[in-house]
Image (tube, rainbow, N blue to C red; front, side, top):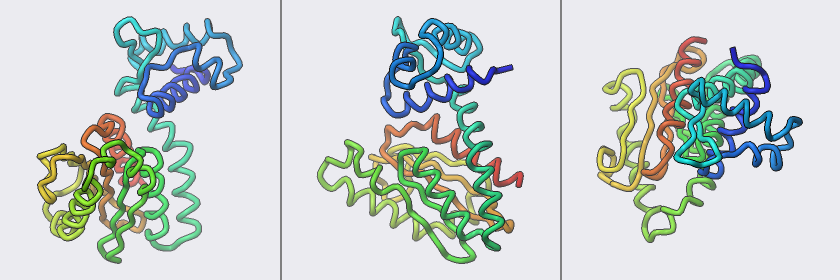
Length: 231
């Protein structure tokens, strides 16, 4: 059984690792995140989280990185606190899935740090959120990268209704050359078909550079789909 302190430390390690892409140490958490315990206590708790499979210590580094199990706990906690509350609020305020899907698309963009798309076929509405984050990625400094990314999205949008009938439920991941849209090799897609409020089928998509954090994004998408399908 994870304690409240261990949960807080794990969630902070995940957030900092996603932000910095570097192992997170107990000293860093103590100095930068204002935890109200000593570095030794944080270090002991991080060791317990490592022993239980939530964190991993690469090589001889003093820091830790999240494992898939750690990401899963983080995302499930995130949904319990944020998505669950948002869904209740949205269903109180709106009779249709439109506004909720828009908010969910923004949520995905924020927590994946990539472009997120949300599609409702009955209304023929497609949201795109996260442009500011995606164009700050180093891949887009390359000439014509933004144009190739836009062509890929345009091709995806043209085929989205066809995909809805062919793909079936679940998550599809396309990496680099696997991408069936515009045959570009530079990007990755995590595509999930799900059921939104009011029982309407649709798509959620996370799109970004080929080096995107697939483990985190697949876990995020999987948790979204399970949450929506069960409510």
